Length: 203
Image (tube, rainbow, N blue to C red; front, side, top):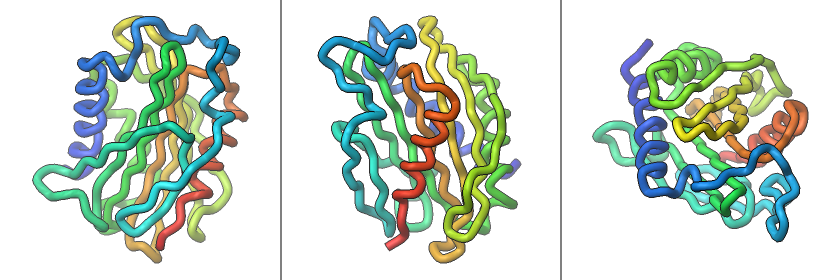
């Protein structure tokens, strides 16, 4: 495992912890797995809007606010960085991350995914790696994906999925992660991730 892998996952954990400490990440009362919440539109049904920056664009659910973070001491740039986006409308919650780093940093996309889970085993929340699968190609490369479940310290359970691929045109690896308290089955979750990833274009 390279130092850059460690930096990536530590930043994920720090970001989640900071948002949680502010009462933003995991609301006091969470969805227990039901999609139908009076007055709230499911996140996966919301209109998608476009984010533009750092040499690429992608779509995300309307109402999701993003913040930018960097790797270590280097400022977020075209070469490396990550974005954290969140919708927190008690009891609905959705969280999305987009990572990118130069291709020389890693052997392949699956190494990124496996390291993500290995390092999260030492985190404050229980993260359970699920089925690994390969989706349709992205940017001429195979898209590597994996499901996972999170049991938060507060007892909250939610499902996630992530996908990683190498983009030789951009000279970067990308990874998109999506978590939600919606009651989506694996097929629905995979389809939604694929929609988000398909929307990412290098400009």
